[in-house]
Image (cartoon, rainbow, N blue to C red; front, side):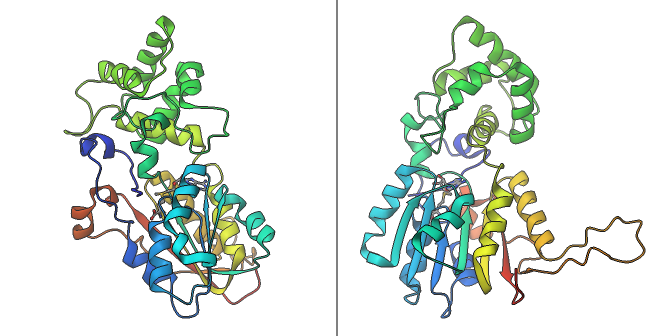
Length: 329
Ligand SMILES: C[S@@+](CC[C@H](N)C(=O)[O-])C[C@H]1O[C@@H](n2cnc3c(N)ncnc32)[C@H](O)[C@@H]1O
């Protein structure tokens, strides 16, 4: 099972486990699949929900390569997709390394790539992973367990200024400074080691804060998670690599849940679509940029009211998609 969650989710839904619905599923299938689609990369396997639907509905897909940087996600999704046999290959990998993974498998170009950013429900719902303040557990939040810096290291080791910037930039948290100060004070007495302990410090610093029904720690937890996992760091590279690996006519769809992610995707798509980079002072274009992709979603595709009503966690989802042009990359 896998949900996408961002600001508001943990607090807004009282931590109840919700039925799993892969976000924008019909739109993903409509944009990415069809009779000519044979080889697909699901770059964020998560619970394998999108992959399962693709494989089920499109028997012409002969190979789906599923990646996730979380070993546990890979194992879970692999179990869920066992019945598809050798139509599926799963690998623990950062999505920006998809080129190397495909090379190792001897796969050249592919017909479709999906990137569904965010976190998986089992990551959030397993207290031992330390992602959610709804579950007490060690402050960890690493998607990739081989990473050396955990949330505990960040919370106890970063300066007040660094914490403020993270909360402000990644969480758009208006009380960032106050919360960072409270954390620095609390950790000077004893290290902050658990999710509930951290949530308590945040709540005491900014008690009646944010939207009603949403826990004041929500945005800070989101911000810490993004920082711990460097979630924005290689996104542009991954999007470009995905386009490199597409066949002409192949498609890439990216679902994001955070305005900073969406901006990176939107700009990468615009650049690859041939956006002129000449200085505005030049009377004519001299950069000669050639479009490598056609943008399929002028405006991002967002879930309708019905989907949001069924799966409130989908509400901040934005999907953008491109099709690779016939020209050489
Ligand atoms: C929202 S879930 C995907 C859900 C999936 N589409 C489904 O239907 O079940 C996002 C997954 O992406 C993984 N992920 C996040 N960043 C990643 C990265 N840079 N490389 C590979 N996987 C990543 C997370 O570990 C998580 O399991």
